[in-house]
Image 1 (cartoon, helix red, strand yellow):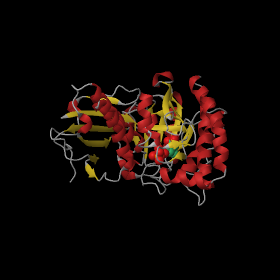
Image 2: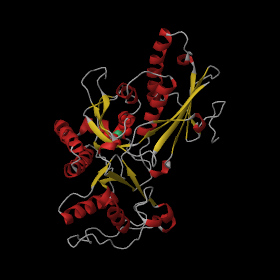
Image 3: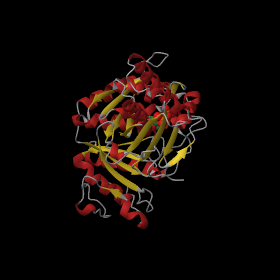
Image 4: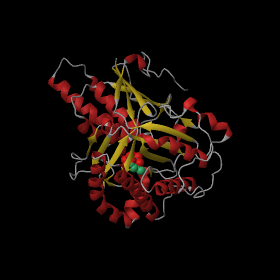
Length: 405
Ligand code: DP6
């Protein structure tokens, strides 16, 4: 039995991918760009074993077996990586014929699924990366990203750390639609992120169906597609120059524009809720009070905010969010995840933060306790990692160690 275990990170786009020109191959209608977040806080971990004893491909997610019969996206990833392995085996008969063996896949997220954070990008990236390692494929990350893309579009960007673009390409077969690294995580270490978990409920409209509804019905979307190339250039430059002022404005504008085309979808799609809008107002007031951008928000297909900011502002931002969006009494102890010890003893006071004289503290009311359920402080970090075999999620029989019946 051959077995490999890897982890892959979450990425949060600052130029959003929204819309497919080919839903089978998962080819997007625009380029996108994201930032890879630390795996210390959020990651998907996947173990895959191959054995000639296995009778079928099987998958366990967070300990529970899933029926993968109709999981087309997963089969795409199996098919593509097996085909590459098969070629290698044809050229070298001494290789174990892993391409003919069935696979057991076990995957877990280190964040509670209930945290309401997207796990498909890290999950599919972990799957494809682990398959490549198991099959020992001599493949570049960008080439592998073309396979990950067919699992879930945004997962192709989770194969790299740092700052990552997904080039839409123009070939019909998708051969040039792949992820490339713009800059590694070490390029801009001052940039950090704060994830504000507003809701842990599963979203009403999935990204997959929402984006196609937008493509079919939104006229504004056509306008957006014209604007993205210029935006990609400006965002790339802002990142390479470590220019937070440009990065912040472009990030917030892109998030707003994405939610604007969601609203222009017919019938409209609402991902933001009242708490999300409160966060938007607060960040704008915070920036205006300093007369400069100190923080930038972005929202994916849900109400949770990700706030990008330079390290030096993070403490003030956490205090500000915690004041306006206090934790509920029962969730107090898990409210703030402080892996980098921003606060001594991890203690966060709910006092009104003194930001500066110009800050209008009544810009928004203090929201009902629990409107923001969790705050996670995180950083820009590296891409997928290979773990040692003793960290495998599968036992010697290829069954999850933490099996939930
Ligand atoms: C709003 O990658 O989840 O997060 O390709 O259908 O699996 P599929 O969609 P998915 O869409 C992500 C959309 C987004 C923006 C982004 O990550 O770029």
